[in-house]
Amino acid sequence: MIPERLARQARAAIEELAAAGALERTEHRAISFRRLSADARSIGLFDLATRLEAVAAALEAQAGRGPRPSVALAEALLASYDRIEALSARLARGALLSSFGAEDDDPEAP
Image (cartoon, rainbow, N blue to C red):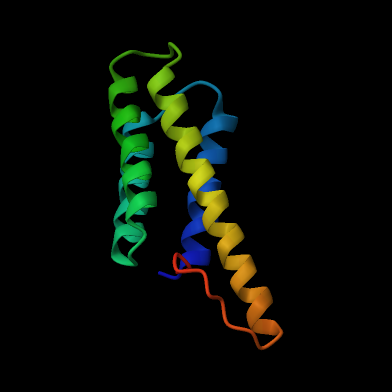
């Protein structure tokens, strides 16, 4: 999987979860986040993989609590979203530089 596609899918999964309001189908959502985590790990995005795994773990913990709010889940979602936004910004920067024939000298660029 390419980083751009992973970033889009992860962002969409987080936004879908946030839009759902009530935490339904938490087991299914946890599986989705574990898959995204595995995809991130497979392309070397280990920090993002760790954050997505934390979302999956928080969703699994939430399943036993019912619809009560979970601070751990909110924090995991925010951390993942922040990491996705940083990745997207780096990818956009690299694409812009490339379009002008420049190379991205950012050591963290994917």
